[in-house]
Every structure is written in structure tokens, then in C-alpha cells.
Image (cartoon, rainbow, N blue to C red):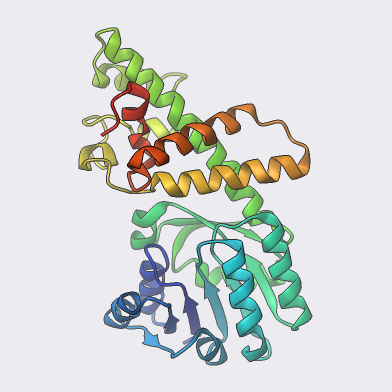
Length: 294
């Protein structure tokens, strides 16, 4: 039984930690929010008084935090307390530069590390069906894989330090832009008198097919599990999509890459979130495109 510290027990981290408990691991959790600590305890995790004390009791440390600044601050605090031979895994979605700086901090402390952001949303976290995109040394990836497999179905080694974060923001730039054009197509179909079901039946088996359409259809009906059938409750919130699109634009600027559609997607999600819908599922942007956000 591996002792695992899990720091960050929110919408994603909480279910992920619970799945590690279900797999038979000893999980020592910590979060600044008392209610999240209480829920993790209900799910079978032990709760430490601090992140540092959680890390000191663990062979593997997993972090799931909001942004790069939080990851760097937490790692700076807990790395001195880590056990010799420990492995640090950051599952947050953060900027590539911060991910690389976290790896450097771990290396300076003599600790192996992996950046391993996830795709699959809250549903995937609960179902242990996440995809992990991993960056770091082959040895760190090999050590982390048995643990990640308890929380996800697809574990991909993308390259060296920061490569997992690079893969995540590129993937989500595709997702954000694809969802927008999918919503535009359904909005156009409505104006032309074509039902959403008819468009789905054609596009889902033709050249317009995409994950945004077949797994996350933005109109009620064709895909029963999509947020469109649940009042556009997330799912994957528009605020999180906007965060990822901004990270992609920051990376594109730093790398000198041209991403005009990614930039347009970031602008549209920024407007959607600013109009009071940051907490809606990102597929709810169809209502903004229709001109009638709700």
C-alpha cells in the first residue's frame, strides 16, 4: 500500500483522491477549505494539518491546484519536508514556464517530478476515466504510471519537463475552437429550419464529426449525457475553458506561434464568461452565439 499525499481536494482533486482510496492506497489529504477536507475524510482519506505534514508522510505527492503561482508556492513549502526518494506529481493545468520551474525546484531538492495535467472533467475524475498528459523523465513516468492508472484510463508520456502542460493547452485550444464552430453550426441549422437531431444524425457520421459533437453535443436531445440536457451545468465550466485558452495564447506569444482561431476562441469565451456565465458549462456558449445567453 503506497502512502500518497493529495493536496488540493476540489472538484477534480476530491474525486481523484477518493479513487486512490478505493484502490487501496493510504491517502493523506490537505486543502485550505474545511468543507473539502471534511468531504475527503468522508471518502476515506486521512487529513493532515498542513500540506507540509501531508508530504512528510507520503511516498508520492499529488497536487491539484488552480494556477502556476499556487503550485510553485506549495512545492517550495513542501519539498523540504519530502521523504528521500519521493515522487511529486502535479495534475494542475498551469503555464508551461511554471511547470518547468516546479521541475527545477524538485530537481534541486533531489526529488523526482512529473507534470501530469488531465482531460475528462469532473465526470472523468469521478469515473476514474481521465486522460493524463505527462511531462518529465522516463523514470518518473514509470514510477507514476501505476498510481495514475487508478485515476484514469489513458496515460501518455508526452516528453520532458513541461511537455504534459504543452499537450494539455494545445488539446484544449482545439476543443474550445471546435465547440464554438459546432455551436455556430447548430445555431445556423435552427435559422434554416433544420432540427438539431437531423444535423447531429448527419454530422456525427460525416466529415463534420468531432468530440464536441458526438460526446458533448451543445443542444438538448442527441447526446443524453451532455450538459445541454442538464441546463448547461458543468461539466467543464466556461471559466476553466477560458483559463486554458489564455494559457495557450500566452504560450503562443512566448513561442512566436500564430494561433488566430485560438485567439478568437479566447476572446469569445472571455465575453461569454464576462456576461455572467463563467460557471456554465463551456458548451453553453451556444446561447451566447444565438444572441440570447441565459
